[in-house]
Length: 148
Image 1 (tube, rainbow, N blue to C red):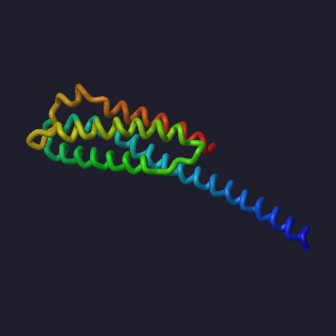
Image 2: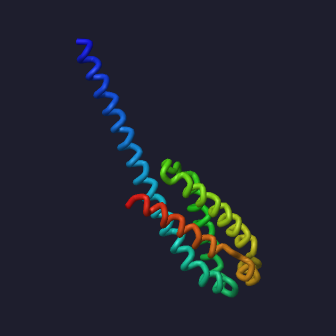
Image 3: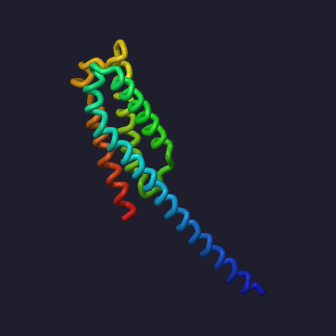
């Protein structure tokens, strides 16, 4: 009877250890999926926002659309920062958080650069927002490679 209990205890420990491994794998897959969604949003923003920003200098509707796009990107970046990264991606996640801080700061600068509903053209000469978003996409590409 004592041997049976030892065998059962050992089996339970192995099973629980296997469950932990499966949970870690699932957490990693979920994180990679979230990172992929963020990559898509950041890529779309980086490709669409510069042209819209140029239009927002003289077009009120474009300026309103840009403000909405900036707010959405800010919310998306902040939401991504709140994700719990698996150990395997912790360092890359921290790099993204740092880049996202710069993105949020640049977005706040953009948002304060609207005058009479239009974007101040000077902001386009003095911003690194679009480059910073591009930098984030390269880090997320590295995260996606974790799943391969």
